[in-house]
Length: 162
Image (cartoon, rainbow, N blue to C red):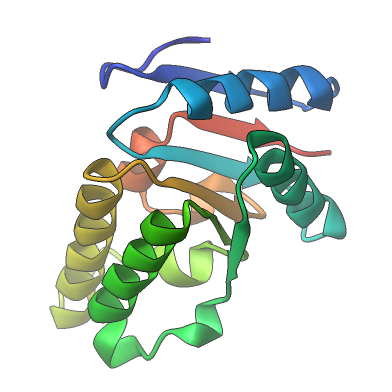
């Protein structure tokens, strides 16, 4: 694991074949983390394994897990909902688990229309708010390529589950 330029760690694991070691490293980082949210991408085919990994991490870190579904967000008011969700997670000390994160944080199209700008604003707002808290966010996706490039660069860990 190496520094990501934000004072935290940065790791990319091609294949999580030693999940206990990865969990231990992430739990240590969560315990050490004082400010500036921690972001993790879980990459792999949709399966119970992604959620089980997030549950194991939350349990090992002594935190609750808040599972977030894309259907919880009204497209017209996602920033307010994201803000309320981050407030809730910080108050409870919960780890946020965004299942199928690409539905919320997917890559923007090449066309610059109002929707693209709003999506960019949503992602920027999410990252800013996460960075202002002690929050932990886990984003599950089939492929990190389906997520916004800026979001992927911000995350401290990208884990591939086989």
